[in-house]
Amino acid sequence: MGEIVKYRALHDYEPTSDQDIIMKTGDVLVVENPERLPYFKGTVEKPESWLEGKNERTQEKGSFPGTYVSLYERKPKIGGARNYEVVSGLKPPPPAHEVPADGTGASGGE
Image (cartoon, rainbow, N blue to C red; front, side, top):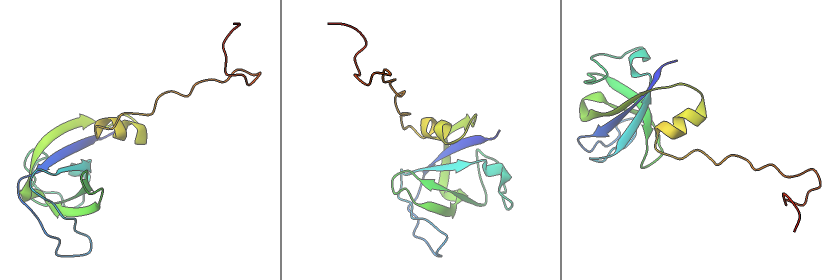
């Protein structure tokens, strides 16, 4: 299972390597299962190590310093990508409408 955790950037951060992502104060960064990162230190509420995730503003994925962020939101991850969209604030796509076998798209008479 796992969880999706959102952090809010407390400080600007300029990348120092190709794996890092830029952060501006106030950016929301999404991390999947931070405690499962091999080098994770601290707690989910107060990370003391680098984290890997996605910046919602820039859509970039990469590493950023955990000491530059504060916990914003924490939710269980229940499914695949569809659950991630809901957790990240995006609305899931509307259900597909069924088209009648005759292809008219109408549901009844006139």
